Image 1 (cartoon, rainbow, N blue to C red):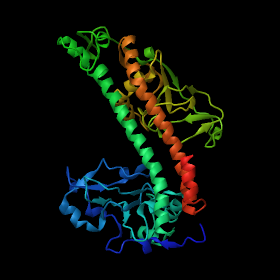
Image 2 (cartoon, rainbow, N blue to C red; image 1 turned 120 degrees about the horizontal axis):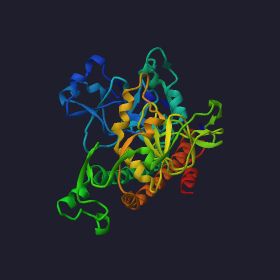
Image 3 (cartoon, rainbow, N blue to C red; image 1 turned 45 degrees about the horizontal axis):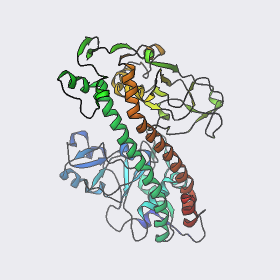
Image 4 (tube, rainbow, N blue to C red; image 1 turned 180 degrees about the vertical axis):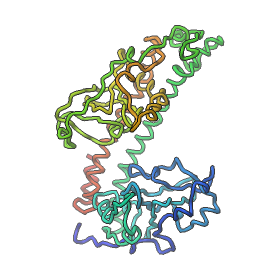
Amino acid sequence: MPADWPTATVDEIKAPKANALSMGPFGSDITTDNFVDNGVPVIRGVNLSSGRFHDSGFVYLTEQKADQLRGANALAGDLVFTHRGTLGQVALIPPSEIYARYVISQSQMKLSCDTSKVDPLFLYYYFRSPMGQHALLANISTTGVPAISRPLSSLKAIRVPWPPLQEQRAIAHILGTLDDKIELNRRMNATLEEMARALFRSWFVDFDPVRARVEGRQPEGMDAATAALFPDSFEETVLGEVPRGWRVGMLCEVAEITMGQSPPGDTYNEFGDGLPFYQGSRDFGFRFPTQRIYCTAPTRFAKRGDVLLSVRAPVGTINITPEDCAIGRGVAALRLRLQPASYLYYLLNATRASWARFNAEGTVFGSVTKANVHNFCTLIPPDLLIQRFGRIIDPNDERILSNSLEIVALSEIRDALLPKLLSGEIRVGEAERAVAG
């Protein structure tokens, strides 16, 4: 840390108000009986995953109950930490047009900052850095559920870098700009994928174009040539009423399937040696793995564009590999026998519930066999219709892939700059040039 940067304890930079640093309520103070359909949201671990604040998936308390738990109330600009369970989680509560306040859970603590001394976003990035994580996790008790011993006392005593406020803001701005670009790409990907899923549901699940033709209507938003690919009647099958001429078959009829196989553990690494290795659902991100693992002695392979299906604990997570890779025993790779691969990806997404049932059937954990995957029953439309779907959706998928690759690149830049900026190893000007380059 630069010699000209002082340090301060968290206790010294907390806001000058009551409950600026506080823990969540005791277990007896908040139970499932207190939850209501709408009201003041409760922040739980699910809202702090991946180093971001997820403003959804809440349970709620009444305004009156939140008033009773005022010491556990958190506002925009507060930092929230997990002190029991998934340790190391930290998030900064963003401004919200929906919620005026939140209540933290029993497993969390919150910090309101004195903004005349410290920029909350700077402090958030400090606790995201290796230094900050080390400080947060220095007093872990591993007896029973992982927890931080004396959590409030431990957090109060942590010393943090305390550069001038202007420099704090400049550092936070650089890192925040990268995170904003990453989040924008994530949101764009979510929108593009939802558009594609909606089209798949309309064509191949709800059969909207067929129903329109049965009623003598032109299918909405569709040219005549595409409409002509759909029949104008239904027929009964083992899957119920389906478009006439579409057949019921097995997944292996439309896809080449490779079940993964895990090489010895000593062939894995995180340094880029060998092929990228997908071992199971934990390696699945949004069209890209959440962590990078490589294998120097792979035995089973997937090609760029293959659809990956997790076949063990839990079954049914789906991804498309953006690269040639190796696959472990927790993954099956599926390649459509005709283009486009996107049809197969959206087909598996639409049948998630059918795959999820395997999670309840395993005696220890869910899994599916090669026979389960090969013999999976599916409706098979005409090839021309599958290809037409691909021509419409492929540009979306290419944009999703491009955005995903940019997310990886931006994340690598951010993660490289984060410890260097917060330790003073590089200064703001150098970082700005690195980001611009």
